[in-house]
Length: 237
Image 1: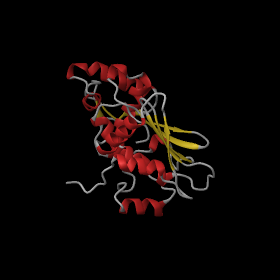
Image 2: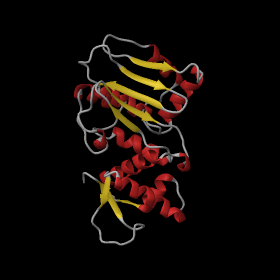
Image 3: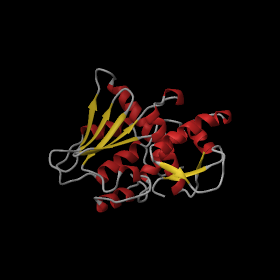
Image 4: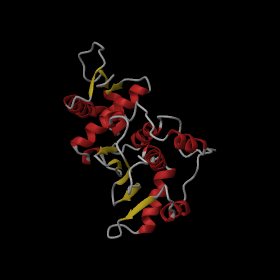
């Protein structure tokens, strides 16, 4: 049995109602679109069933800029996505969240690791992406502006319903995840990530081509004339 903390509805309510001088977790309730009881159940399901909510909240707390006044970590829940954001810009580019690690508040990060709230250094985003891939869900989206860093966690969506950007983002993150695991991305691994059948290799090839066109991945140099058996690595590898 895992020793990891189990998130409950009682804990969700406690997070919503808690406040201190230095930390505050805000839930913006989309009352016109969703009942709060269902929102709480959604949070619990994501936290306990591999959706990565706990990891993302922990990351937001750890990497927030405490020098920014009047801003807090926020969890905004809508009918489809959940947005987790923290004040401040990240120490690394969003495209490198999976393979690089630079913590703004290391003492806080160490404390949260000791409590079992988050995992070892640099593994949080990896685990979130892996959990999303196992469910064939859209890849998380990372947004950075002059004030905040935001992660958008999308709900379930069939491959046919994903936009081109959804597919390209998922392909790039899959390639990064494979690379840090010492495995190249292939047409087959991408099909498995999207839940595509073996005869849909041409579909996966189109996604790979689009991701290459976006300059996010590249061939790993292995000599092969077949896109089906080619291997790919992130652009920075």
